[in-house]
Every structure is written in C-alpha cells, then in structure tokens.
Image 1: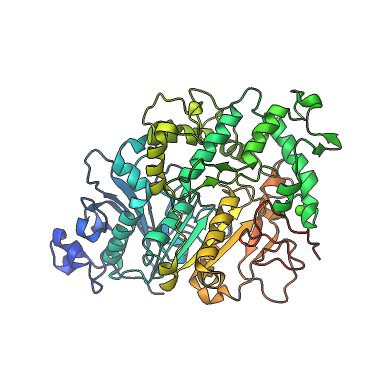
Image 2: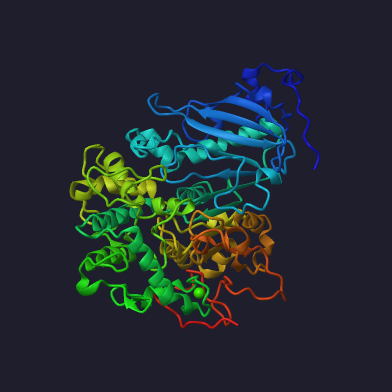
Length: 584
Ligand SMILES: [Ca+2]
C-alpha cells in the first residue's frame, strides 16, 4: 500500500484555527505529522460534552525494528468541569495506513494511556502489532492520572467518574476519528476496539452504547458488571480477613497442586492443564481432596503446616468459589456475581519474576486489614488485588469517606449505601443484552476468558453470553458473536487475539473457522524456563485450523462433540458438568 505523502499545512491555505473544521469533511487533504501540533478539535465534533480537544505533541517516529514509521500524536480533551482532569490520549498513525483504526481499552481503575505502539491486550509476541499491520491505533487514560497508592481517588469528581465509567470512550473515539481525518484526509473505513478486564468492559460498552462506531470488538475477560463484581470482591475480602483464613503462598501452592492432581485427567488428557473446569468445579472439594495421597485438610481442621489447609482457610476459599447473591437486584438488574474457578487457579505461589506478578494479581502476601495494606502490582508485599480494589471502591466511589473501613461494609446488606450502589451500578454495569443495533450494522464481537482468572470470573462471561443468546436467540447471536473459554491461562498472558482481529476482519470466515487450541507453547514458556514454566505455558489458539490438519489435543469447540472437550461457557453452564469426553 502506498504511503500517504504529508501535505504541508501551508498548502492547505487555511489558518490553523479553521483547519480542523475545514478538514473535518471526507474530502479533506492529509496533513503532515509535525504540523498537527496545537491543532484543535472543536467541542461540536465530539458527541458528549467537552470543551474541545487539542494536540499537545506530534512527533514523526522513524521505523524501528518491527515498528513502522508513524506519527505519534498526543492530545488532551478538556473537561466541562474545570476541576476534572483532562482526558489524555495518544494516537499512533502509521505512514502506511491500512485505512482501519483500532482503539485500545484500559485496565483496573485505568489512569494511564495504553501503549498504542504496542500490542492488543494479551496479544502474541511473535506477530506484528496492530501498528505494524498498518492500523491507526489510539487510546486514552479515560480521564484521570492514576495515583498508585489511591487508584480510585479520582472518583470524587463526577465527571472523572463518568469518564471512567464509559464517557471517555466516546470522547476519545470522536476526537481520534477527527485527527485521523486530518492526518490522512479520510476517516477509517473500519474501526475496531480491543480491551481486557476493564478494557473488556469498555469493549462491551462501546458495542452497547455506540453500536455503529466500531465494526468489531474484542472483549477479553470483561469486567462487564463491575459494580456487582466489586460487591463480590467485598465478600471475598471479608472472608479472607477472618481470623486464620488467609492461606500462605505455600498453602495456595498445595491447593493448586491438589486441584491439578484431582482434575487434570477429567478432560481425558493428563497434561497439567484442567480443560474441563466445570467437572473440576463440581467434583473437587478441598476438605476431602488429597495431595500426594495425603489429605489436603489439616488434621482436625486446625492450622497444621504449609502443606495443608485449615477449616478457616477452606471456608474462605469456598467463598471465592461461590456466588454472591444480593438481597434485591441492583438498579442495573444484576442479582449477584458468580464465584471464581478457585480449584485450579493460581492465586499465588512462592516464586519470583512473573510469578510475583501472578501473586500480586491474586491473593498477594498480606491478609486484608484496616487500613488496607498496599495493593496492585507495584509493591513487594501487599493485600489481595480484590481487597484493594474493593477498598478503593468503598472509600472513593461509594462512601466518599477516605477513612471508611471497607471490611465493615456488608456487600449483601449495604443499608444506607444501597441508593449509591444502585446509582453506581447504572454506570458501571455494562450489561445490555440486546446488541441487535450492533449486529444489524455488521458488527462482530469476540469475547474470550481464561478459566483460571483470579480477578474476573469466566463464569460471569459465560453468564453474559447465555443472556445474549436467551434474549437475541441462538441463531442471531451466532451471526455476530463468539465466546471462548480458554483452559487455565493466566489472564494477562497471551491470548492469540491478534489473529482474532483477523477473525473480525473477515467475518465471512466466522462460519468456517474452527478455532483450536494447540499444545502449550513450549518454545516460549516451556522446559527449563524455571519452576513456573508449567504454569506459564499458554495454549495458543490457532486462527483457522484447516480441515484435515492433525487434531490438537485441546480443541476449543462451540458445541461439545466427540474428541473435543466442551470449553465454551455458553453451551456448558459452569458447575453443571457434562460427562468427561475422552480425547483421541
Ligand atoms: Ca488435562
């Protein structure tokens, strides 16, 4: 594809101030990269209220390795409320544009601009990045700069909270489309969205609320019902804070090993991967499980060393495995939040490097307490991620009292805070099931979730998929949506989603595609890579498994059938096992 020659602004013959309006038409000429600095986007070009946007930096970056030459734009979208932070955004506009755009979502409480020259969340490392493939890639910090110690503190400002909930998505997208028009002289022919966790929620938000803005979206491990999830975090945090309930890293390693010993074979292949998680959920009982032939439960249920679990610990772990149910539905309609696949998920083990990141996203090293210990991935020692997230939400979103002890807050009986939680649920639960406007416009949606996710339950994604099928009908759903569960898979590792991007780009392939999971990627994470190599192996999805190709062992299939362990939550309600299927 030919590169687009930059056209100096002088040749456009317009003063800078009027340029943005003049170029907002489809027939506008392309502008040089550096000349875009200072360019304004008027508030009228952005569908939600702002005071307009402005380019704050424009740097032409030369090609470097696999990164092509691109125009690196930074911009700020000014808030209506002068006390609210600006939305900071960045765009990577390649010299050789494929006429498509990709917006990247955030994560957690957001507050940082995604690396637009990098990969989609959990994308493969051995494929070109979206920028490398010619996409115009953009994303924003969603309207606040994260404070590492208080990542939820931004929520005191209503506009910042609304931006985080989803408004920033539309403002960022509209601004980006205008800047793309200015740079290339044309709007993208197709636009996509990709995000994981909070970013996955954002993918569903744009599909639900602005159904013609994006022609495809990848929602990975989406925290789509975030208010309900926060309440489940609270329930789990309170359970882990009970006396003697917090398991050590060694004890969590023992639990994981016991679950593997009990559940690995349930999918028919002993490969240290639990592919039939539903069967494991139904059969595994930590009170009766064995580890290397010995009971996992400590003698008499009392605390008894690092290779067994006490009754207090087992009780807390059962809370993680089981749902929270609200006394009455939230205003968003959510009635609860499912449990997590606690048996087979790595909530932390002794180790270093990547394992420490796993640990910090899991239960970390310190039990929840008041005041809450540090949390997040940047601290040596800390509280469970769940507990930190809950604590931020209660203090900054719900009560707006920084001294509030979040462990005294009963998520099932919020009392005087019920109205505020309802209000937040309407903003944070992104749970519409009628996606027909998106489907009608030709949109395609991919939802994928690892079954060993510590922070967003794959059971919730399965539930959302079931709701869409229920409300839209299986036939209509199949025309635009695919949902995959991927066995184990530590959530923030590589999903092969870039290849999924191809899946969205060529929607006709939907019917013919036969997604498969290939054996673990031993080359990248495998033998000899350290004690955690086994856990880090990633079953990669192949884009299209051609007919006649040798069957991989763990195939992802849309419907259970012989030779294929059923892995899609949509066809197999979690907790209701189907007979174990033998692999060929
Ligand atoms: Ca297995």
